[in-house]
Length: 56
Image (cartoon, rainbow, N blue to C red; front, top):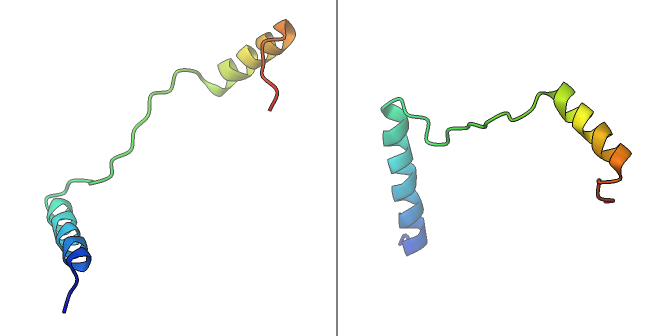
């Protein structure tokens, strides 16, 4: 006999399969780049010079 949690997990996997079959990425990724690496390094150096960085 399948437990309730197993049934829920099975239903979710089936739903995931249907989403993927439609060509949709169910876990899309995305991010907004606010600075380039060069800009981030420059900002860090600027803050270090001003004593504004936190010690870890």
